[in-house]
Length: 297
Image 1 (tube, helix red, strand yellow):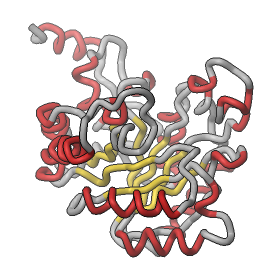
Image 2 (cartoon, rainbow, N blue to C red):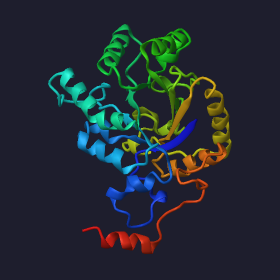
Image 3 (cartoon, rainbow, N blue to C red):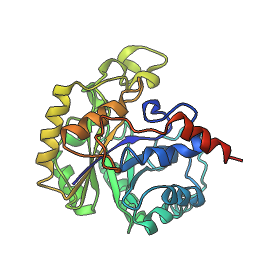
């Protein structure tokens, strides 16, 4: 089974009619895709009440991939918000509990930064992180290519299998040490993630393009049909290793993620959760939107 979704649901304008309120967007989004990545959790661990609301607003088969808080993965700069790791991990586990209870948590995604390289110390950190997250499905994404260098590739994959990490396979620019190649290997028989970051090499890192706004343009990329067809074949091959694949399009600096996701769904022969052709945008009419507004007191 393959399910296709997007990173976040608030910034994909082509999915919504004009005037749809922010609070209604997740429900509207779930008409188009069966899966979404929650990225707000990277910046702050979300209250469990909010996560419960997300679970309640979506259909029964809907799934969430929730990004781990930045302090857990070493992205945090400055003074830590949490005094102790136990407090931080406890808060994150509590936040995920409503989605776990609803059967909607596909994985907690631990995306490590480009400076997190393959060292004994970092391997130990991954072991400790997995121990603290016991009982919760966790996915692992690297950004430093040393983990998949020829000398370490198979050992990295074996380690992930032994520890129970779900592999987050990446399609991203090949821009030096701070990027990883496509490694089409599942490390969990039940679930695998594929994240489509685009291939904008010049904007991938601060040093790559010399732009002050590099973070705003790093995902500025639109996949061609030929590139998507190549990924269709890869996904079908990957299904021989894992029962379910969650594909997340994160190439949205220019608003291309939703269109590329719809194209991929069409290439895979998938329908929207409502049974529609994914290339035909289904949205409320202006009259329906107006009727909704009447009751929004």
